[in-house]
Image 1 (spheres, rainbow, N blue to C red):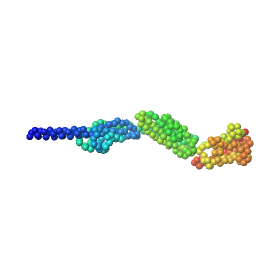
Image 2 (image 1 turned 90 degrees about the vertical axis):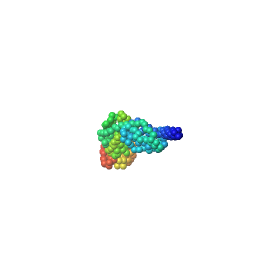
Image 3 (image 1 turned 45 degrees about the horizontal axis):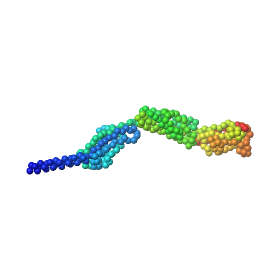
Image 4 (image 1 turned 45 degrees about the vertical axis):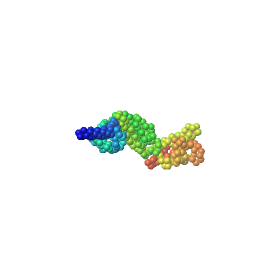
Length: 307
């Protein structure tokens, strides 16, 4: 009888030992790892949860950051990625798979470092430019040492990496007048962190024009036409008259393109009525126009016609 009892105890012990070994062989293990450094204004760091030994999903994990428990994670993935921007040491506080036999194990740690981006301020010499005054000086201050500056002035000029530049804006394009140009700056500090700042520069609608005081329409291909350089003028408001010394109108146009030097156009010195070349003399011009803001102007001057 005692022998039979002994045999039963041994069988039971072997059974429990078998169950224990089976559970241990099927016990799930999770490893947390990762070491990432990010800038505070860039993408997230990655901490990895690696579920090993082919346990039975879903897996339940609670992790902590600097010993502060975070939200519970439930997943069926063999490798789970935690995307984070929170600095600190990452540990696993609790883990089990679907069997939850009490034999699941945890190991490892992860560390995330967050570097603060540079905090920059931008100062400008003036925030309004015009055709006659297109220069702006820029100065940048930062709470960190800057490695580089990258400037896009928004006027179509090449991007430059000069530090604290002075820029001569290119605003010949008429469509820019009366509008804002967006100037962008990208900086990088010694830690490899970036920051950007933008600044609006207003383009004032002033105007300019230039007329010669003489020309010689003798077909020698030198100063044969009387023409105008201008900007900031309403084309439809334009009127240009030329008078002889006795007050007779000898030339007139409302089309500014007809005397635009940039278009290689100009008055050839011929009388508007007879279409004959005028005699050498001193003539008087009267110029009427409006600028892009609607202000009206009249200009007078002398033109010397010589052959």
